[in-house]
Image (cartoon, rainbow, N blue to C red; front, side):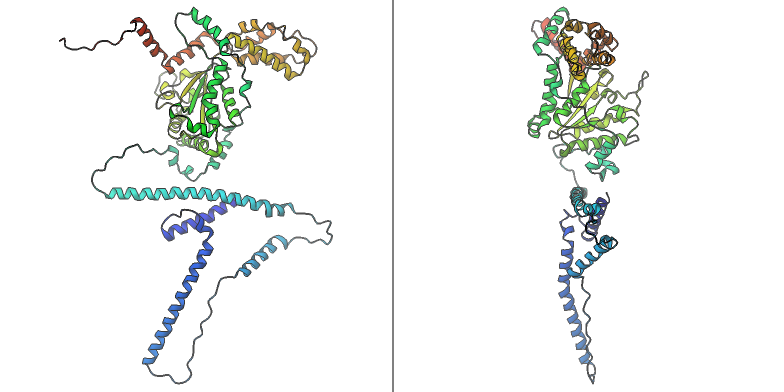
Length: 556
């Protein structure tokens, strides 16, 4: 840190000297490294001018003497003293060696016995590692200062243009195209002189950079789409009202792969994606335990991405004040846009808390000092900051999506580009899940005789009983039963039965019909399903005729 500050101070001092001397910002730091050579050239160029001025002075004195009386006797000639020159290279080298001896070697104890002499770790570190570290720090400081110089140069040129425009009179023709608005965080003084690494360190200090749990796409258990759709066909025939089929686990895997993993996995693929199909943000909603958080961790694992967790629980009591929310969002998106850290996953758990309506309500008023204060900055930075080249995906998850304001979620000024519903598993998927989780727990315990009990279990009955339970609840039930019977695992097999599993299962949360209706209503609102259904029903009732009413007017 001290080395960085010293190098930064030296270069900023030189930049200020150049500003006062030339009145312009230097383009780079090449002249800083050549300043000794430039000073020497200036002095060598100034020496012949001094000699000429000295000769002119002598001539003028001799001319004045001739006009006066002639002096008798010997004339005294003034001998010029030689100018004091700079230190030679040899003297500089001697001085450097003397200072090094006095600081490093003078106070060291000399020992006659060679065997007792050992290497000094600190000295070796200073002479080898410190020089390499200082060189890396120097390159980093130079890059940061050159970037700041280019910004200063651009601001100077824009200031000159604005002054020239003010001097002109008359109306100006409007230019085509809109100017990009500056981001709110660029106006904050604390963030102007802060580089990306410093922003990343602040996010790490506030525990907003996480190591996501390692989940691979092969770990997601499901069945084929044809088997999963059998249950939907039987159920849809019973209901009069048409309802969209719930996606299967295999369909959800392919959707997530198409939207998130494949485009962000390669920069060339990301650039080739059309702007219409460019997905910057995706909202995953569904009941508790349906695999929403696991899917976000899966995306981060498959991409090897930096995982920025901006959930309300993590932000509670942090970045408060008038500009605190803007500071955080600006730092998070600046780090995410940096190509060095790509790809990046920004995770928002319980995202409905960010996008609640801020209008005054008599019932259940929203706390404006809570997560809602991040709403405006999130929407601004997502729509203005992220471009097609940025390998960034924002993933929001929600158990209560209906609490959010639909205008903040969707549309031109909305936050999310895609919405994916994670439902409870189908019958055939539940059969597979029960088998998978029981075998997984048996392998983790390492007891071989437990495998004999698995074929005896009636997985079809378990799947029927567990209708309405999410995959996370099924996994939790199996793990709870195995943990509660650790003492009996090696002695008897009777504890592993359908009855025991069901007793543990019913203690967990079940997704009710009201919950399913709630998610279905949200899906209809966010996808405009009701309006499309009305159009289809209108076309069927009219027998394909035009449903528009004739315009009112005067009869001919």
